[in-house]
Length: 343
Image 1 (cartoon, rainbow, N blue to C red):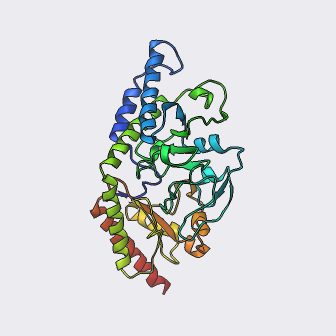
Image 2: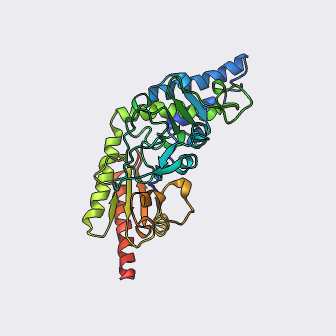
Image 3: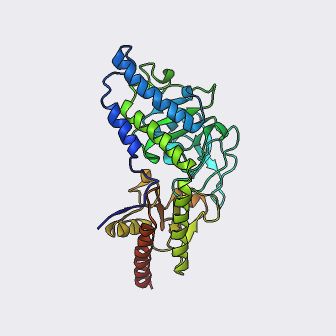
């Protein structure tokens, strides 16, 4: 059985460009902070990646702070600030904010100091007002035009593994003139904002992935993914089965479909599809294993029973129409069986 991966919002396959850059970086011996030739070679790898990522975000090179991922970047930006946000934020962000800003039934948020650009569960996009203190760009970066320079945010975060880079590396992006207090202290790396020897190999992969992702975005590849997502949703809708498509009719990521099959628990769907050879999820990967109703969907006004019956199908650049149709047929067959048992 050939498995089909439809959980790209959790993590993406490593891009060939990232793999090649990482393999090359493995042969670089020095520490980027060392002043000898080997150290300067390692620093050159980091500087190249910093340029690639800065260009992708439309910022200066010194506006990028490398971290272990978006989670660390969010902590670096938000710890002790007490900014206000809504309950649709990722746990890595919501852990540091006062989550009291209401969410509309369409998933839209107004008046938050901290606001994600795209929700990882529903794919719903937000408009980021000027002066927004912090924007989580992790899920949107590489899938939609998302230049930090015109986002309106003061700070933002991203992770490499969401756009074909390696796991374990990300960055904080700062508006020119903005600074943060280091949480990790010891060395003077990252202009004193994040101590610790840089993850040269991971950073190299991040830079290559960001450059390749920008190229793919400019070439219109994600429009083809959106077409496949719409084929999936139309096929399921035409079945006549009771299905709620969360965020349909609202601006969403081109690859994300959040479905509610009333009564059929999300984790049961995930297990059934896994056995059938399809990888999907019941929400954010960082919340996996927590058998409870989606906090995001509850914030949008869904009852616990509905919110517990949601799945997320997230496509990638290599997803094919054949894979989408195979998934649709398999999922509908399983749903029919569930409905027959529940009757």
